[in-house]
Image 1 (spheres, helix red, strand yellow):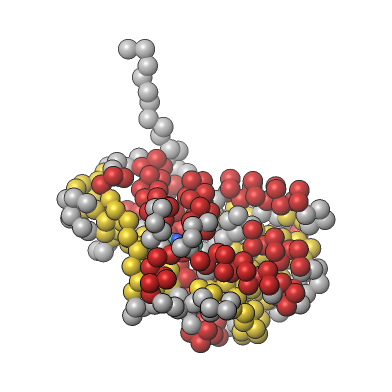
Image 2 (tube, rainbow, N blue to C red; image 1 turned 135 degrees about the vertical axis):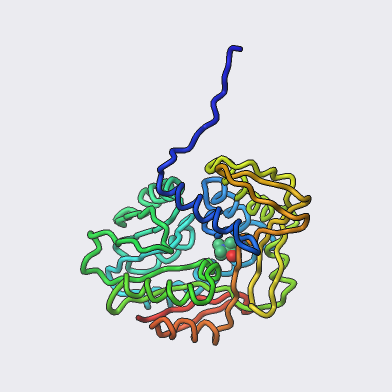
Length: 320
Ligand code: AVJ
């Protein structure tokens, strides 16, 4: 035999892989099964998310971008001169570009878990905005991380668009907002985008797009587990579904098992009943009142809020 194809074995003691493996094993050992949504964003996952934002059904991105664009002047007047803008979970940087063009920002610190995607976007941004200092931080912003020493003395403004806050359980959202305030420090400000409670049909459609991009995004999590953790998920043996939970005001994404089956991950077995699901994401929606209560409970004051005509999405300005 001429070729012996060796499997690509991931570095066993890579701390990122370790944490991923631990979280996956813990989540799949639980009942109901779950996997944290932060693991969606490998390179392909980040690209699939960008594709979701271009579907007709997924309104949050274009609605928020509309608010940021139309209210750029008002939002800019909330940003102190020579600020450092710290974006949590930066992704494609499209929204930051709107603020960077309008507000007196000297330094931009995009923080994102997807290091390679972030580097590429940060390099493009530095080229496009001469005079702006870009200091990317490749980190999981849900865990403690340090700000670059270079921004010492500059006023700090947090930026957390995209309703990413909605991925946290409410108690985690409170903890995150408090930690962000402590990290940014005295007199910090924050600009945060939050998806609003609305017609369940609009919500359900947004997470079940007709072209199946969201389904691909959800299933890509299993592909990533196969590749990085050496699992044997059969992607064709799972379906995607997003449902609105009216009691908890959240969209839930699930991957359901089409059959009774067993999956192997790193020497362990996980059994699935037919129809059993893995809960892969919750996306909480907040009324302005619920958000104000949440922010106040974390030590922030809501100074201003902007929404679109349909009141589908809100951008809030917070003071620490
Ligand atoms: C990136 C968390 C804002 O919850 O709407 C999009 C992710 N999931 N479609 C969201 C997502 C399915 C998105 N956030």
